[in-house]
Amino acid sequence: MVHVNVLADALKGITNVLIRPCSKVIIWFLTVMTKHKLGKLL
Image (cartoon, rainbow, N blue to C red):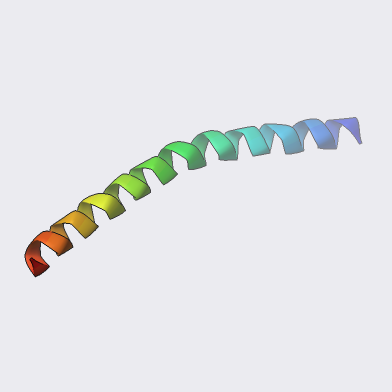
């Protein structure tokens, strides 16, 4: 059971490390796209 918990924690840590930068990039990309779309609309 302890080994399973350690593996689960490791996976959570890895996913958090991978997801956080990706989410920042996605948010940045979305903000840039919305700005461009707003610029085109205006």
